[in-house]
Length: 257
Ligand SMILES: Nc1ncnc2c1ncn2[C@@H]1O[C@H](COP(=O)(O)OP(=O)(O)OP(=O)(O)O)[C@@H](O)[C@H]1O
Image (cartoon, rainbow, N blue to C red):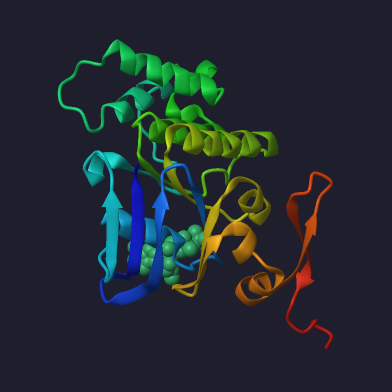
């Protein structure tokens, strides 16, 4: 089974060190791990460090069937790149990314069609990428990642442009894929109710440092949310006996104080 361990991982852009001390794992196939933290905390940088796109100290240890460049697939936060391709062509191209030769097997074409159907984007097949809405483009980006059949999937805010039902659909689908295919998913998210609902583990980063990591229900506490985000939060249990979060305001002194 695929596994990923991070040992005192840090990262720097040139001389500017923006991340340090991320130690976690081994994370294993079948688990969905959220990466959370305020804006500019270092979440995307952590993904780029795991991919080897930025340099840094510490060790990233991956145990996978395929070499890292095939096993790890990254879905970046910015999915707006324009290309004169149809949706269908762009997903086939993604499926061919690590292949040599021009032939596309029937199995691969079937896979493309199944993934498009599972994300409910089949009707967009022959639309140009440049003609899509932000949410449609984000769903295509998810399809491009899934079609590469990753062992480790790094998703940077994959639901940021999606409506409520699509958010739920995509996150439930990712959770199901992780369990059914022993896929290891790391997913940067800002919506902590989604984290509580769909993720098993969480890594919390603030100001370029890991401040906590572990099972979601142990790590996401009112105290942590006050410390990391500066909010007054209440963790309640809903009628289905699941935790959910209510934010009452900021935890600092009120403006009139
Ligand atoms: N290419 C780059 N060159 C220099 N600094 C960068 C670069 N990319 C990001 N940074 C800096 O690294 C820090 C972490 O950025 P990062 O994008 O990892 O944050 P993030 O947690 O993903 O934020 P957000 O939630 O806003 O997407 C920030 O201070 C950012 O300005």
